[in-house]
Length: 329
Ligand code: BDP
Image (cartoon, rainbow, N blue to C red; front, top):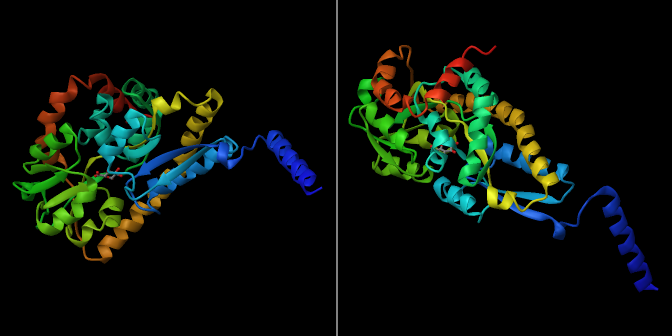
C-alpha cells in the first residue's frame, strides 16, 4: 500500500515537472560564476540577479552559482579557466580581458569617453556589441557589459596634480596599454592582481593605485591611500563572460535564455552602480580622504597623447565609432 502511494506520488511529481517544465535540482546543469568583488558590490549583485533570471527563464534547467570575493581566483586566473572550459562564467574588467582578446584593449586608452552617457551610447551601439561578439574567436561568449564608472588615482603620498605622480610606484591592471599609460603619466607601473593592492599599499611596495570610487572604498584602499585625484582617465566597462566550450554544450533554447538573462540584468546593475558610486564617495570623504577634482584635463591628455596616437592605427575604426557615439542623443 505504502509502496503504491509512493509510486503514485512520484508519478504525480514527474507529471507536474513535465507540465510546468521544471526539472529536478539533480538534473539541472550547474554552472559556476567567478566574481572578485564581495557580496553587496554592484557587479556581484548583478551576477546574483543574472543567476536568478537564468533559473527563472530556463525553469530550473540551468542553475548559476555565484562565487564572490575571489573565491575561485583573481581575474587573470579565472579568465584562463573560462577560456579553457574549466569554469563557466566570470565577471571581470575589460582590461585583463584585453590580454586574451585585443578588441577590448581600446577601453584601456585614456580619456576616450567624456562621460557615462557617451560610454553607454557606444557600448549599446553596433560597434560596442561587435566587440563583445568578437570574443567568440578567443573562445569566450561576451554576454553583456556592466558599468565600472571612471577610474582615478589614489596615493599614500600627497598627490594633488599630474606633476605629483612623477616617480611614484602605481599599481596597474595586468594589461600592456594600462602599463604604458601609467608610464606616460611619469609614474612607474607595478602590475598586480587587485587582491594584492591593499597589502602592497600597507607595506609600501606601491605608493598608489587607480580605480573607481566603489573599489577604492570597498577594498579598503582609502584607509591607506587617502589622496584621491579625480581625473577620470579610464572608463573600463565590466564584462560578463561565458566559456564558449561550455556554452556550445548547452541546448540552443537555453543558450538564448542565458543571453537574454544577461541583457536583462544590465539595467539593474547600472542603477546599483549609480547609487554605490555616490555612497562610496560619501564614505571615503567622511573618513578623511583628500579629494582633488581636476578641472583642466589638458596637461593630462597631452601626457598620454603619444600613447593614444600610437594605438590609433590599430583601433582606428573603433575610435571613430567612439567619437561618433559622443553625438548620439
Ligand atoms: C575594479 C573592477 C575589477 C578589477 C579591478 C582592478 O571592477 O573587475 O579587477 O577594478 O583594478 O574596478 O583590477
